[in-house]
Length: 323
Image (cartoon, rainbow, N blue to C red; front, side, top):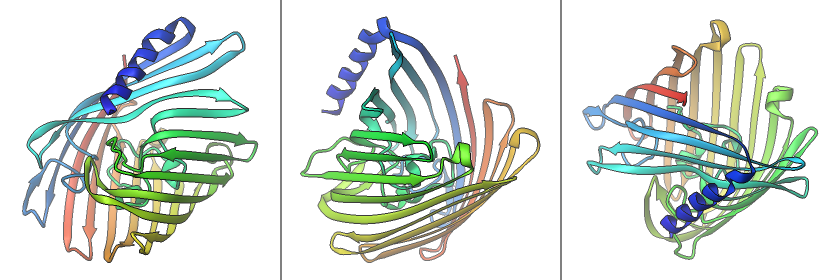
């Protein structure tokens, strides 16, 4: 089914250029190497071996804008990677953005693989980051397959989405997810935003592309906050509810500090706590990002998983450039 949807998406992109205003194509190269205390060895991934982020690979990011007589009417996006999965010892294709979006009713409607309307990841792009948000702990998804609608107000926005709840992979096993988020403040404009989110449905247990077990009920409410002042940046999220009929709770706080001209050097510290289905995780992490050029960045992350006892040090080189 996923191949059918991707083929249909590519067909639409091929048909629509007669209306296209412009298109952008970027290529990306990523190198990742680290050391894990638990595995007592060097690793070629930044998180868990089955997580999608971050791994060695090459990819592209294609954006096509559509226009009519009244101006821009929509866009299409397709972002994919081929990465080396060192857990399975094979090349793994990864799909991030794969959606069509059109302006309708004063807002935007989209269909495909896109950000859903829950939590900080609904506006926070962590595609290349080593430090990850709560979606990597099972609270929401970085991307999901479905449809959604968003509407921007003068001082905030509203988003709703219906999706599969299967994350990166497209699976149908009676799973579904409904999400919504309302926010006050626009981060790029007001230097702050506060969002209120809710999700409910039946979702499988997902780690990257690995899906185990039957779907379980989930009902989670969330509060997220971001504030930039001077060279400092704050991001926080708190989620609470039930998953698989058991109590679920997660919290994240990240502090960042920018240095040098054009914020070329960024220092970050982050704490994450997650509890669901009888399991607890507590992470403390610190990271450094140095932008060597406008297209090339180097990142280092140290992370300690306090409850499970793991520690890891990861180095990433990330090159994202237009062609």
